[in-house]
Image (tube, rainbow, N blue to C red; front, side, top):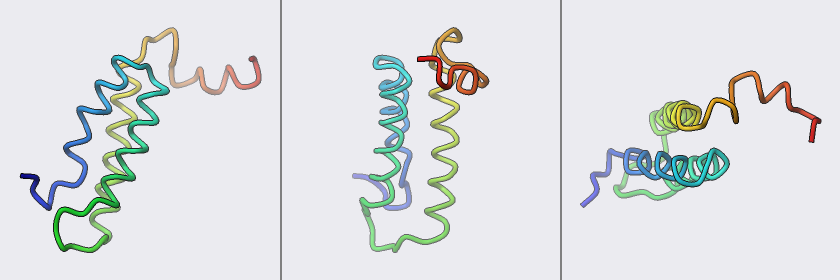
Length: 88
């Protein structure tokens, strides 16, 4: 049984394993899909409020750190996004 006050916690392992086995692109897609599911799927009667949106922001930040930490350094560094724009 899933508690109604835990919106995004069940999706952290999904983002971690998707990044570990599928790469950072799959991890990004999984984090976006998990965020959408966390906002839309409601296990209790509580409406979407400011607290849920704040938890979504924290979830996305932690997912970004998880994806960045699970990606090899030669593939993605914080500055490689800006250096590789338009090179392919």
